[in-house]
Amino acid sequence: MKLDPALQPLVGSAGEKLELAVVLKAINPEWELPKAPFFEAENNTQFLPWEPGPPASPHGMRLQTLRTGEIICCSLTPALGTAQAVAEAGMHDFPDTEQWGPALFMRLKKSENRVKIYSHHFPGFMYQQRPDLSFSYLDPSLRDAFGLDVNLLQRSGGALMDLIYEKDRDYYLHEVQQGAKNNERFTLNYRLKLPHTGQIIYLQDFRSPVKSANGLLLGYEGVWLDITRQSVAEKRLSSAGWKESLATLTSGLLHDFKNSMTGIGTLSELYCRSMDPSHPWHEGMTMIRKNALEAQKIVQRIIDLNREEAGKRNYHNLRELIKDQIDLVRIVLPKHMRIETDIAETDIPVYLDEVAFRQMMLNLVINSRDASPHDGTITINMRALEAGTNIEGDVPPSGFVSPKEGALIEIADEGHGIPPENLPHVFNPYYTTKEISKGSGLGLYNTKIFIQDHGGEITIQSQQNQGTTIRLFLPTADFTESLKPTGEKRDGGRRTERRTVVIFNESNAAELIDHLRDQQCEVIAFAQAERLLRYLPDVPPESSLLLLVGSHFGPAMQKVAREVEKRFPGLRMVHVHPAHDEGDLPAEFEHLLELTIPPGGKQRRLVMQILDLLG
Image 1 (cartoon, rainbow, N blue to C red):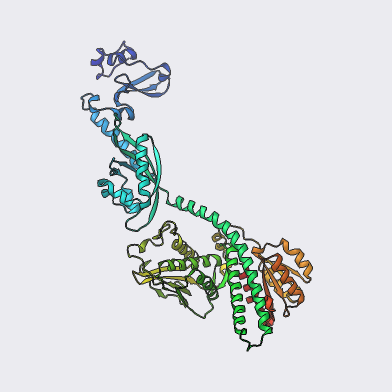
Image 2 (image 1 turned 180 degrees about the horizontal axis):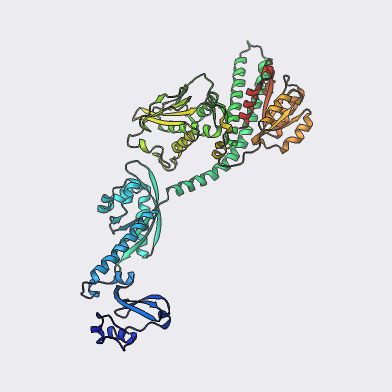
């Protein structure tokens, strides 16, 4: 073999008659020749430690081979040991030669680059913490993610305690101290309250205590993970399970209450008819009857809202939708609070998800209620809006300009207002200034999503100690929306449940049946009450409607109505009669919704009203 001139002084020969094993032994007596398979590969590498372990040597030589035919070229170059060996070594463990400085520098540079790349893509925040809870290192990206003062947290352990949610501080201190005693990796969950926005974030903290050889606590190393979305979702799922059970119970109670109010209304109607108007009790009985009917209507609206599901869009008259919702809004307001309305008497057709709209309106009013003083006033306005109208607001800055004709809805309160520094965050998910148990921080976020998904705009204007106004713009429907394929996508790709219309007294409804079937409704018509009642058990009440068609609400129709209310309380009934006839509903059935058949066979409006009821 031939030796490089640089190795000849170490071996004492040019190497013509030497073997590789002899060369290795001459350089370091501790080295052994690699096994035969090492040389069979086209190229190979093996680290030869300068000193035998343990502990592992932090430096040595790298033996590399390259086969070219029958000739094997070998090279020996100074090399660093494993990362663990270098980390555990001191400077005195390296020979005093200039060659190790560049090698150590390059190893350090590579390690730093790897850590930097890993830290950039890691979904958490790394830290090193001292025993006094200040930080020797804290991920700088925390400044951009949450607006935290990283420098302050590195200087003072008290700064972290100020950030931790007050109710979690004792828990945090106890867990950290206990984990240090156990001397093993541990995990704890707690909350931080961000100072600039008041937002609450949930952290999952993975940490390990770092101790000296004699057991002295030097600090902690760990990672923070932001689990805010997961924590809020878990709380909402737990709450949703209870609410679902409560809704089932409430639904039954509402039906019982509605039946009781029906009895009160019927009895009061009977007494009113048998009394002379001059009787001292007549006025009181009339008031009882009127209030009983109003109570039945409100209960029915609550039942409908509880039964329906969001996700289905249809055409609605926005004016009627808002007026109808205000009746429910009054229920959530305390008696000492007032509600004022200014709803334009203009029919504004909109294409939207009715259930989601009602939920949105209810959430906005509840927000206004919670922010208002004891005897405050909440104002709800609605007016038509022309295209290009400028609407003032603080978020987004300068409000917005209406892109087309539509309607402007305003909900205003006299509350404490929103601080200017918090305004940019009000539409962020999970942002809330309420206590954890009273707000999820999703109300305004969901409102914005709903409005934008319906082609609208939203802005908020607020002044501290004067109140907040939320302005919503919804575009006027052009009656082509239902033909657009985007509707299917917005419904989340779910299959729409088939709508069923059951008609009693089919002889008066031939044209109406044809129109409804053109709208993809399943229509079943009956002329005999017995056949109708036998069929109804197979009808899904949540997506069905029973139309009682006829100008005269006679004995057969009354029998059907009584049996349906008794046996199928979830099925909605509507009395449909010609426009020239007032319907002549008996007092027992005055709570039924009434629709009219327009003269001249123009039934488009009637069909749209029925489709609205079906959702």
